[in-house]
Length: 420
Image (cartoon, rainbow, N blue to C red):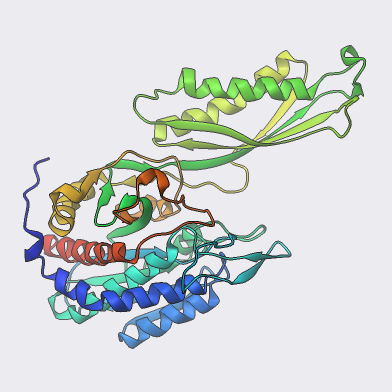
């Protein structure tokens, strides 16, 4: 697709974003200093609610426990555009020496744990608050409505609870008014400040956890012939599952992953146990591969177990699953000129997919959506030295947020303009 280039200097939103940049940074620093765990974002929600009410917007709270939704109604006919930011922190202890460093703690499964915004959700909230500020100021120029969605529990609800985008959808967040399209973005500690990465189709993987219970016959470790050994059976199943990707999935189209992350069985060196449990995760980037995994993983496990005289019970999915984060092709085409106009031609990167997952995908199952990666890595830091997400050293530069504010604003304006 050919994309015409419009000078960055001609973007009318650029000055507005520059004018509020210092405020966006203040919001981000506050949120970073006071993070909260999934489904516990009570003070974060109050902080967001206060600002959205100050803008004069219609605000709903308590959606999916702590979610906040605000609606900007232009009073004129047009589409409803949704913009989403996630709010939750992680049980990680921050080691960065920052004036706004988190020293917060929270309760997780009965334990007191450190809490940190180790994935950048603080920046997502601040950027959406900034976009809401600009769009509210421009209300007279809008056509239709904007729905600002501040979502809890993207990192996953605590054990025994539900949460996140899936629950927001079930509680009607995309209704009343009915959302036509949704846009979201994620800060990237590995992408240069000022750059934006996009991809048509699957940009982040579906996640499907599974459990395999292998049942055999217990025996003394000195007499293995008297057993039906679930441990050697488990070893063969683990290796066999890898051939699903290497020999059954067309990996030249999209990557796929099968990982066994947990093995439990036995309690002594000289006892062959009667049972072993495997727990793992499947990641896929297209519908066909995902459907194939649902057939192939149980087939492999059960037939390998049968060949060893054992049995295998497969639970797939285990306790939750996320769809593919899938960028609608037509909407992505429509928004590409906006990305170029906003960031500049050389800063718009056609990216490869990642096998991490995002529950933004639940929104995209219902309405067309686009999800982007926004640069947060300082330009003077080599990519190989940039701290990874979900680590105590995680860091993104405040200056990266200005592009996010502009993109959320411009995508909304351009989509509205094209719909009228």
